[in-house]
Length: 511
Length: 84
Image: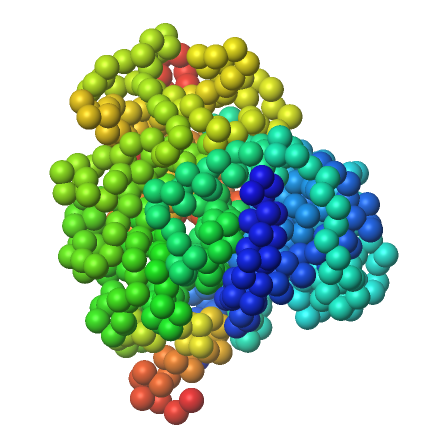
């Protein structure tokens, strides 16, 4: 399997009638998903999507989102899934930054799609999903309806245009400079990462994975990609908003795999789990932030038959490490060893390799290390630097680690001030930029504060000049500009903010 | 104030941060419309318990009871032993 669409296509050949996707009350076989993706791919090509073009998928977790991902790949193009709560200004930014050719979104966002068409020169057309798509699409030549495409386009497989060196997707991630950047994944990166993860999780075709994480998040996206690669079944849910429903679904579908982030496990551990038969569960995984040791312990007590994997990774290479489950007793605070077919080392500020128990920056080497940030050569050069062999690049993670004598990794902290809230990466600078948009805000600082459920909650401090604003006014503006996980939980209006000797805002003095 | 009005005001103040009330209809899905996000349901539970003195069971936290002003008001009334 060399291209990502092969994950679907080869499983469709091997087990066409096996249920691939359970979502939105539908049960779709591999053959059905493959056919739906072919039809949409043909429509995309018909309307001008060419090899290497970027297609933005702006949908919540849904059948249409899963099908769109594979349709874009089959069309030889590059998919870009973005968070469904992305607000128009950032959506326009990403569409322009990626110079997207097409936008796939849902009928309720038809007005936003029209707005984007006017603001994004590269955008040729939009595909709308949902019941009202047909009536909205009828009004414009540059709007298509997903269901009509399924009704009218042939399911003939489009010609294979790419090689594995071509890009499969861009995954936008927040950076400390405040502007999101698209991590470029070549097909070969995805194949390497997916293969490695499947290997250490010991996935088999009988595995049934439940995914509650957004497909815009690489952790969520790969549940879909990996499930199709190993020929399993994916139960795709919108979110963990209704935990009881998720547990009910896990019981009904005899789910074997449950990927989560600390926020999800924290909520789960507050619940009475006795009404649910979760005996089918084989494994649970955690990444994005560290699971508190007390939660690891509680999970093991409540789910003694389930294997728990503590892992660490970043979008820039998908995953870095996993803790072999048999080490959980001995080294519960460790995030483990490098994933198969990869290696890591720790360096000091000068780039010299460090020995055991010395804290430094983690560097990653392997075929999963991605190509860089889309059209951002400076940012790319900072993180993706020359490796040991000529022409190769290794990833400087920006995370501080130490390694014990046996080579097991321990996360210390970030080099920059990125916040992890609900397992999602939040750039304080991005929120500060939004705060500075508010007339009268003269100073703004955003920090993370510990939170038992969120991991870190977001707290914003602002200084006003010449205006009377309430915290609510500020939150309203944030909500209109930022994705839901980036909206601050706390806002404090201050007369002034603490400064360093050189006059910069001193965040370490804020709480 | 009716239960619906109390819910609308709570949502306007704590989720929409709105100055001019709750601009959606009582049937609008909180999740679909982005009114309440994935961890927001927890806050709704707290609001319902504290404001109306009811005890929300884990398995009652489902979209049928929490995903719109109408659903939530009906659920609260049932829990309070009032006619729907």
